[in-house]
Amino acid sequence: MRLARPRLSQRLKQRLLGISAAALVVPLAAGIAGTSVASAAPVAHRAPAGGYEEVFVDSSMGPVKVQIQWAARGGNASLYLLDGLRARDDRNAWSFETNALDQYRNDNLTLVMPVGGQSSFYTDWYAPSNLNGQKITYKWETFLTQDLPAYLETRGVARDNNGVLGLSMGGSAALTLAAYHRDQFKFAASLSGYLNISAPGMREAIRVAMLDAGRFNVDSMWGPPWSPSWLRNDPFVFAPKLEGLSMYISAASGLPGQYDHPQKAIDYYNTANAMGLEALSLINTRAFQVRLASLKIPATYSFPANGTHSWAYWSAELWKARGQILDTLNAW
Image 1 (cartoon, rainbow, N blue to C red):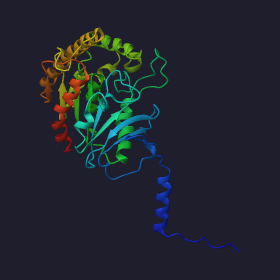
Image 2 (image 1 turned 180 degrees about the vertical axis):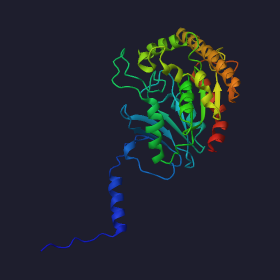
Image 3 (image 1 turned 90 degrees about the vertical axis):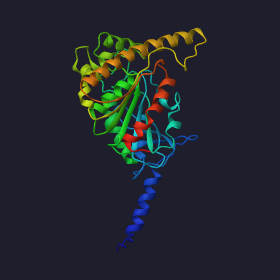
Image 4 (image 1 turned 60 degrees about the vertical axis):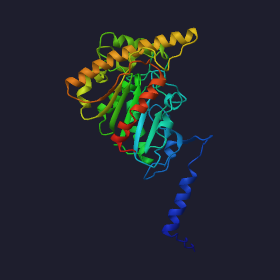
């Protein structure tokens, strides 16, 4: 004779399921920064109200670390902050080279800082770099426009209320991402970006820069110089796709300014290098400005009389763009 199994009430079933699900989430918090696995993140109707967290989000490249400062009042807007050519594997430089976290701590805007991607231009590569033994194929555009927003949506960040801002390599990448993913990004900013990649000498300059920053082979990224991928990722070429997008475009003169104080020989070398890089960015950015003007596409421009290719100036430009960012994303 089989005994009848006791029936659980619907409410009790839901409570037990909730307890089981919660048990799967393993807290890995350290200090003030929480670290969690993205696949275990709870589904929420709104973003956490303030606070800082580090998560790992699954991708075809493996788990990607993302540093997040949540909107102060649980709003659904976010700003992606993209790193430069020498992006590190442990932290996004916006989180420690600038005061970005303090700038936006009290705003209803989530800061999203993906970690890694040295020399990647945040794009999808054809193959791993064959000059440095890279094991994976960079797929950063896919990550930033599919994997990451899918995760953020489970935490209350909208798929269609985002901005993207980057410096240098990340500047041109920010415009590229926004141009081809207008359903995701309402705002884009380039700080000291290279926005006329088809200009004479630019492809060679990018090749040399990527070799210097990790021995990455540009042919694995966009193919040979005649490949259509070069044109697809050139802001000067795809400029018509930016119509209607809120943009902030900045580059300084390259002349040393208030944040340049070289004292040692290495400081003078770095300052001279930063001067040259910024001057090249300015030439690119001015050409891009003329291109947008010819298309009658408006943008906000900032061309400081002094400033080199360095973090203190980008931090200042991030602050100057704040009002436009918050207005566009309704994130005050």
